[in-house]
Length: 561
Image 1 (cartoon, rainbow, N blue to C red):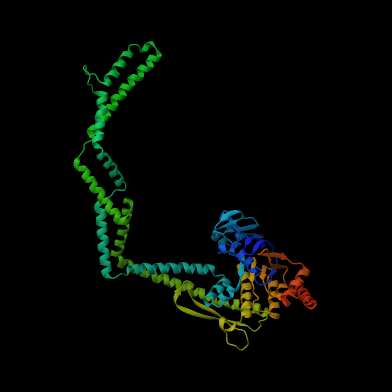
Image 2: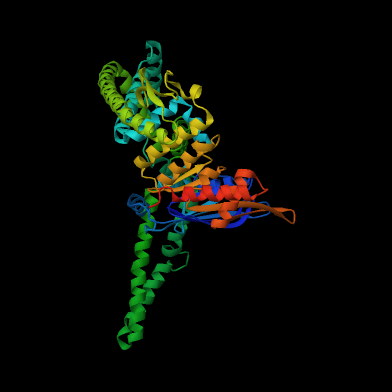
């Protein structure tokens, strides 16, 4: 459950720490005091979309921290899988900067907003006015029934089959080209393949050719340097015909006679002798290189032609030779597919027919399970609405089969309702008032909460358009729900607020030309005064205070454990 919410520089709230209790928490205050800011902050902390507009004017960033305890084991396991600390306490934090970026953390470790949303999707359920509007959209009704029916696995199996069916349909369409298109495509692919295959490319060929071109362009310099190196070591212009290498050999012979007389002379003699043979081997190697280096004037022209061919192929088929070869392989596959298209098309059509039959069977199974579940769903909703002062409600389902398969099956489902005896059930948009819609949604939320296993339920002005006995019933229902779930409710109704275990008041003030909002938990006396204010306005009288005291006393005695 949500234990604490710390807010700093969020809209008109400079700094606030809000503590929530286990059971039923209400938030009251004048319109515009900032109640919606708390809901927006909780939405933000759960990884939902937010923007820089929430940052208080003049501040660099907005900061929100939420602490949860008694974390469900499924969430702890999911957190561990993602590499986060999975203790019984969960701390979510989010910073939204004035320039627009935001940072999320899970137990102090950075996280993306999408990861937070995924992990915490069943941690808190927030109900707002938008939910009532969604209830008026018949396309949403099937999702409500599916959540109640625990059909997640069935729907997933169907949707996998449906996607496979769409893929087969796409492949079939790609093969069903007319004969003229087929002939043109075959001609183009054949030409491209012949052009690439005739080039007989090798993966590393371009690099080797470029290296060879460098050698050829510098061939005169290379041969000249090699000749000069040999000449300097093994040829002589001296009168006696001796070369540098001969002089090294003579030096070695001179030392050979005296090397036995001194260890140092012996070492030097060995080194000179080794140098002579090393130089002789080097000269031999250079001469071999010279003998193998045959420059063909036509080779450069052939090499340039080859590089030019590679360049032209790269412009057509890819940035590198491996890219060109990959293009050729894909072209070969497509050509074979087209040539064999008739046979392949027949095969795919058979697969499509079998897959469609499988999808229809799964869709029919979904339909049956949905209709079976609606009987129980309808009964539970009617029981909830009866408690909420709508005892004569009749809830039916308008079920129609679609002609074609859709991502959700073959069902069109709309809830129909009759709020008065003798009336024919009709669409919610044509029957239900604002107050009735609020109670219907509360009934649905309560029924689904038991299925979803959500620990914290947040209701943002669930009582809009409701007063008197109906408002009292909503308060009783929220109190009842709080026996198994934490409930947080933003309300303008004294009847609802009176049932709370924890009453929080949001107040707005203007100091030095700046707006400030504070949140405080009310004691018994303060609660009486706040209820009286909601009932009769700012001018509190002894009668309004007495009425508020009585209302609070009756509500607190209700459903006591």
